[in-house]
Length: 253
Length: 303
Image (cartoon, rainbow over all chains, first blue to last red; front, side, top):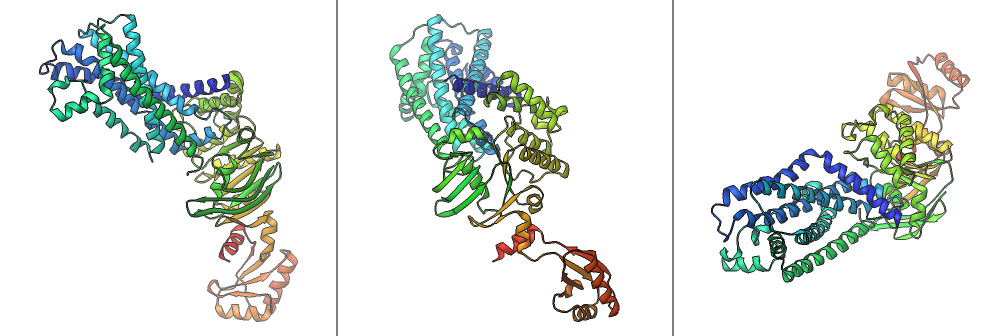
């Protein structure tokens, strides 16, 4: 048990070093959220009417968009490890089998949370004044962590299936696109009927609404449970599929 | 140390291994030779617990690769075809990571890393990211990573493909030292010269089956032994030389040469030259031709 934790810890350290040393991806991962925040607030913000300050409305959406994009990038190092043979070497060691995957997922989560904190800090500088209390922040953190973990494991599946690091990175665009079809950036009431039906019921919306309500200091249990049900399910499915695909490499290649 | 019985493996309908039997004693270097697609890598991957065989059994260091993979993993190290070292870590960090995964502890892993960097001529590069290493340096580091904890069995899948001569020498020296130290080494290679230099025993794998196995010298002597090649030049001279020397002499008209079986002694060569000299057939050059594993390989895979 301790040995397994030790293995996972070593692999998390390895993946964190990768994040810190791949400067271009690190900069993209950190600057893109900030850039998007400024873009939405100062360029689109004037034209969108949400019944309140657009900054307050859009911050949870930006946080979710960037967390999803960051989580999707977990596919890339997984695919890289497969092509370089690093995974073969780790699999021939008497260590926790999934340690290398856990390393990528947890390191990705930490990087995501760091860039989320940066987005919130920049938002604060330009006037974001959330009414959330400590418990509300805890709820927001918990839901965001669940979302990132679920998306990361799904992304690991893509990485295990992709033939190269380049094709693995395409998963990011799905997660970069989906939040636009939700209440992340504009209220769903403004969308055409068909789109609105999709936007109201797709899984991103309850997560965004949970974050939004928590930051406003008015958490809503029903929405939060819907979000937890969706992404708890995705997490279970993604984790199961990832470990299955990883084990299946026994017989392939 | 390694015992393989009736091992089979297919991918979809393609049989990659069709009943392989092999035994490898401890502390020897065993070379697995064969053309591309013969099944060498598949065999190594089965022995290293990365894939499961369809049929047959394989034991490594006394443990079954399917039923006791953990025990096998504790006894082996694998250096695959593509270098598995981490580009974004330094050479030292790569070694320390593997050392800690092999349970050497923090200090133990650090000390072992320093030793290996010295041994593999990487001391000055130890603190640099592997991204900046040359191909040869990466391969050396890759081998060093496999030796962080002395394995009982070491698998090397084409360890010197694409290496410069110096890196190849370093690798060979390391393999010899390991075998002398009691480590069983199984290497696959396409370079028959490498097998000849390093291996105590050689097996030829072709279309998923072992077609020949034994010590390199034995395999070579199964074919034609040494021959003297006499370069004569003109076709007329070749004809006359064959007439003078009789039965054993084989003409090689396109190259203007005659090949005569020999035991390699100076005396026999002197007799040959004297007879030709006496018959007035001038000889340009003399060469001793030894059969190489290439000859064995080409003969075997042709039939």
